[in-house]
Length: 625
Ligand code: DMJ
Image 1 (cartoon, rainbow, N blue to C red):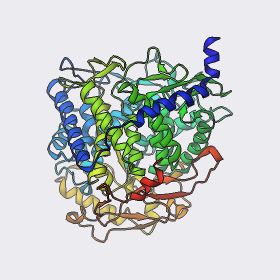
Image 2 (cartoon, helix red, strand yellow):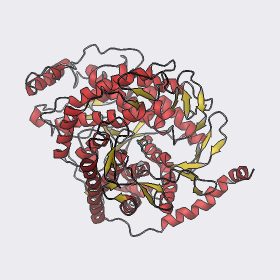
Image 3 (cartoon, protein in one colour):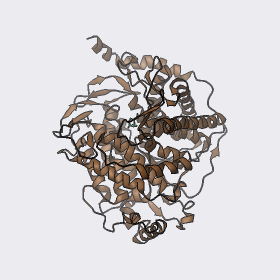
Image 4 (tube, protein in one colour):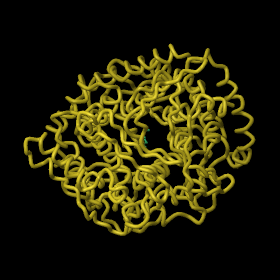
């Protein structure tokens, strides 16, 4: 009864009491200036190496580091997980030496023919995503990190790994089992209950793999899983947290944007952006509209019963903090700013975000006191800074660095915090600390300095996987079949033949370089809209696609393919843009961010129109509150 009455007071409480918290957040030290941003960027680089070297010296080839005791532990499958998860961060930092030696070591030593039962979700986002992103960097001149002796080893590993996970998808609903044995398939005693995030966060990695191997099966199964989940949404267009993959019944009907569901939303939008597959966009729009209608208690988000929308958990959980970043990508920046401010006020209060913070009692949720080095709030900070150039996000970044350095740094790496009130350290470092947390922090400050990095000034636009892995919008991935019929483009049979000739030359006739020949007749299943004939993505959205004039190998570094439209830019311009510096010395690249407008569900807009946001200096004023 007492707790019920608290919940009734909940809207008043959050508006009253958090204005206090936000005020507290307002009392900041001096704003981060460009010189300090550079120092902070270098400090973050140092943080990466403290943890990476700590892992390599004390834990490798085990999965993860125990940074207090300076030992290692196998936590996922026993295959150097932290190294795989760190590969594209090494490339982003421009560490050619370590990137090269790590890729080559993995290509030579890793194998998945092992009797281990692993999480399909974790294996996909950490291992498959890590392998694919590193492959795409190591195999491409345009990234500036191509490894001459690299011969697609990581792609072979990625395909082998994913084939071993396919038995998990053999369910009546298409939603995969949560775990699979890499040698024997699904154990007969395996639980039939899985989370929505677990079943619905596979489409990016599986889709990229399909497009790199020309085998549509991976993309199909991942999409069927999303369909299996979405088909079971409630009348309110909400999904629950846990579902039985055989019966399709929800076993946990709490709907939310955090724990157990979070990246389901994320992959709907990102799969559309990466693959141009409208079905994902339609689902995202409905799902997002409903989330904003039923879960959003501005600026917070709550968990509700998926059928009735009654609040069941007035709790902020730290996984929700990716949401403002996703909103930036969707073009719904204003609510993102408010929510980020609210979430950051929790960080300011404790120095970290606890896993759960109760919005009714305004205290750490019982049993959810830890901060396991999660990236989500930092990720959203990066996106909001990218969209607005508001220096307050750099100030937030400085706070993140200070907390991690003073509270979480330990002898061989960074430690989980078991209790955000006591700042007690625990002997564990999740691999995502190097894949995401440090990556987004470094990107945040690099954006303020010169943006001269692969993501912000590289040859392609990149989508970040939910594990922070870089998935580029290359023609092969993003335009798949379309570009073959459009303007006779990049992947015509001629250019494919040419690519193969180059590969053949380089591999001394090693047969493996031809293992993925281009199929003129890409199998069209009818299950995957993005691959169906008919109107092309380009035709639908008015994209124009131009080839670089020179495609000689030595010119590829300079020749950046251009894909532009009045509405969306997929691939960066060939012209190197010098960072512009405003009156306060902040660099501004006018870097386009893909925005889907009409995402704001508050006024029920469902426009699919794509618009381009130029994040110029002025935007800072525009979005500053
Ligand atoms: C990461 O593995 C991914 O970001 C995932 O989507 C959520 N959990 C962790 C980070 O907190």
